[in-house]
Image (cartoon, rainbow, N blue to C red):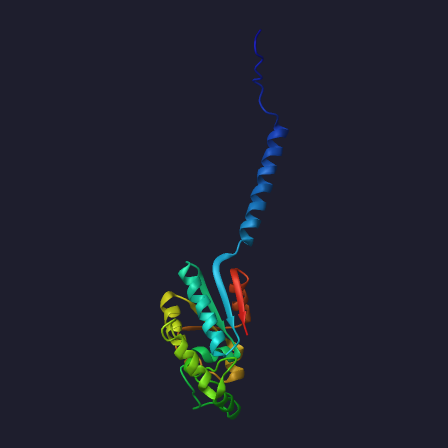
Length: 192
């Protein structure tokens, strides 16, 4: 008995069908790859509260430690976290009032609960002293580790902040730039 070997060439229709299926799979794979988030974290900080700022920087520094890229977007009251201090010179009267009412820097932020007229912040600083880095130290760690800082451009005009009153290098941008980062991030947090 002899084996029958088919030496005929594949039909052109089969080749065309396989080529089309490979092209469809390639398109599907490209689409899937475009929807995979980047290895980054986006943190949007609206709050100017001490404890919420601490939490935001703990998350940022933790993500950096895990090899992720981190972008922090500061808007409205959150801008006080990275300000150098109170600056009134050259501002309009309403902007002076806003800047007088807001904390001047991270050192002046009150906690969201148990403020007790400034005593609460001192108590939290004391409790954190030997257990974790202070907020100011966490900001320095984040800057040195490569966290990218964005400041909301509309907040600058509304709150009366200047382009040069930040303790870290910032990119002053709008909401579209924040969304560009947040929508492509693996994780996005909104801290309010």
